[in-house]
Length: 209
Image (cartoon, rainbow, N blue to C red; front, side):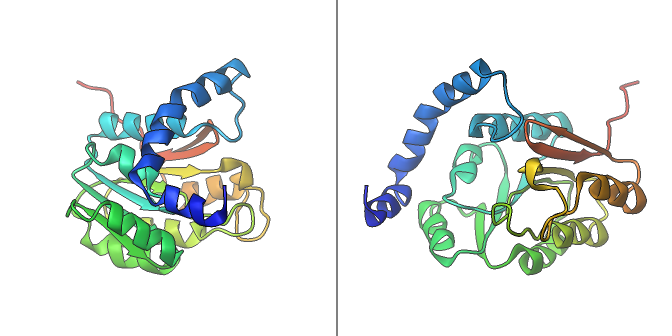
């Protein structure tokens, strides 16, 4: 398939239909291989978002790294509001077109390290953050994103960070040890754990009663 055809496909509703259709098979193959921690299937990421949104009663999703908009697509009925930040102009515009008829979905173009701090003050409740604005293992705005979330907002948000395998101290990524120390020092009381290549940062819920 040529580059132009691939772009046209990803810009269409067929892309999301195909992704949804192939997701169960991709997940089954991953389980058959013993659920390796790296490159977890998209369905695993969707289920992590669904789980924490349900358990913590979260109705607003903040995403960095829109890509082709599939995470927005699968969550469009789950959240009351969705904010997604995308650095690439073509992908941002593509997502805007796809969700133009949904005023509760806001696609913002720009670097999440500078756009996210502008979004945070408008939040009026705890939110679920899906932080995936990485440039593969080359760079990540995660340090700036964490500072914006915790230093500008009084709420106990739940943070899910994709691609835990890249947190090894190279380029802009902290090591997992550095990340745990930062959370312990600056945002105490929160759990940091890694499962299925997703870093999960949250404040444990108090037992009922």
